[in-house]
Length: 232
Image 1 (spheres, rainbow, N blue to C red):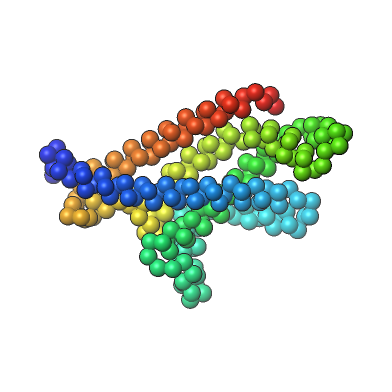
Image 2 (cartoon, rainbow, N blue to C red):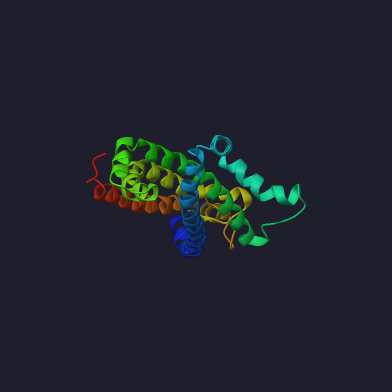
């Protein structure tokens, strides 16, 4: 049982704990974005390579990563080195769990991003690349001055969906005991800082996700409008 007065008394403690957890969530989100966006582009190039062994291998890896749950990937990446190889490569404590979670998220989302990149690149009419060749542009100039600009407009909607999904997927990191915002909220059900049996802090965690996703949605909508001058 709890009363409104109890919530008022407990709120400062809960709010501080949720803020600490959300900072961990934000760190995991931004590290994933910084790692997965460039890695995904590299993977997309590999999947489109004319060297069949390379493209075939990368397509198999992308299929495995996209076809298996991220939760399983987190568990394997975190526990496999210690349990099977006998070496804890991640280190101890919260920093070790964060490092392992970041690696798992970057690998997972780079594979998803690679397919979005590939679709965006292949969606640019081939005639425009031929026009660049006629103008004497090199392959790199054609990519950056012709293909890339049009690809960005094409990939913004699906990329924004994946990035918003990433915000919510960060909650999966608690499976390896990373103390993100939902972990912090759930802790008050089990007992944390003198508070136990309270479920209301868990509902407040949703507010963090709603606000952050709302900000991202506004930013992506503004980006789409800014790129609207491209008529693909």
